[in-house]
Image 1 (tube, rainbow, N blue to C red):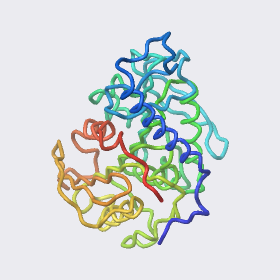
Image 2 (cartoon, rainbow, N blue to C red; image 1 turned 30 degrees about the horizontal axis):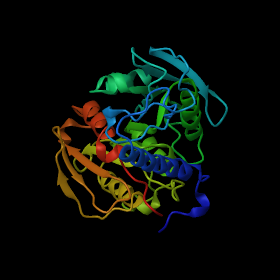
Image 3 (tube, helix red, strand yellow; image 1 turned 90 degrees about the horizontal axis):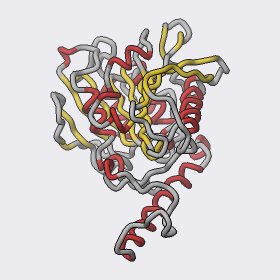
Image 4 (cartoon, rainbow, N blue to C red; image 1 turned 180 degrees about the vertical axis):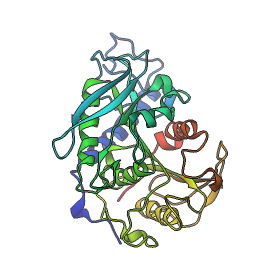
Amino acid sequence: MELSPAACRPAYPLIRHAASLALGLLVVLLAAACSGSATPDSGGPATAPPTAAFGASLLERSPGCGTAGRSGDFTLSTTDGAARPRTYLVHVPADYSASHAYALVFVFHGASGNAAQSHAWGLQDAGTAAHEAIVVFPNGIAFQNYGIGWDDRSDGYDLPFFDHMLKDLETAYCVDAARVFAAGFSWGGDFAVALACHRGDELTAIAINSATDEFKDKSDYLTYRNLPCATHHPPALRFQHAESGDAEYPPPYFKTTSRLLQYLNRCSSTASPVPAGSSSACVAYPGCRNELVECTYDPRLGHVVPPNWARDTWDFFSSDSVLNRTPAAH
């Protein structure tokens, strides 16, 4: 089943990617023609060059660049799709500079959780994230009679909540729009899958942990409730879970989610082992429109964020294979 073009969002992400590729070609041509870099008065570009810390990826600087911003941990507010006030915790590096474009990472908590829970997972302190990333920890609210969590429906109120946070932060802070990421665990992972399906054009990569149960038939990925998807260019995906299943997501939910993610990224169903860098066992799927890595851990750990999750997630987000991707034709 193909994703419905009628469900697609406006085509401005295609313009964003095309502009980035054109800029990359221009940089290569200038490097070949010139023996040295431009000085401030030599007629060079007004914007900063790509940061060496993230390989050859090109910066897409947000409107907030050049605007002074607060650093540290603090709470901001916006509205969701139902026009209700919503809050989110933000971590901005202590050495924040308005002239440097930062990665932007959204981390979504699990059922009955809050921003303090997802903050405690420590992604903001993992590796170079401490100096390279603005990390956002949204607060869920009660959904119907299921308790605190997320409205992960395609027409629900939390996808606009994400849109509003993204717009507000890109306006207030210097964000590299080519390095916008999301991560979620459990119900937050369910929402991360919804983001992959309906906001993938806005995200470079997504880390999904222990999700999703949003299938009419838990054995059939084509019964995912948010199909057809609106995403043109699927983000890179890292799916991590207990092997086979856990108490909250018993078999075959993880297997079905894996098949859904393969479908979204047009992957082959065969997988090859890849270095995990942690206690997880990981495989990658060939032929995808964008990278898909699936990692499993000892089911005796249960339904938890596994050890090394923060570092493994940040390593994935900052890897060359994620940052230097070329949008695929469709």
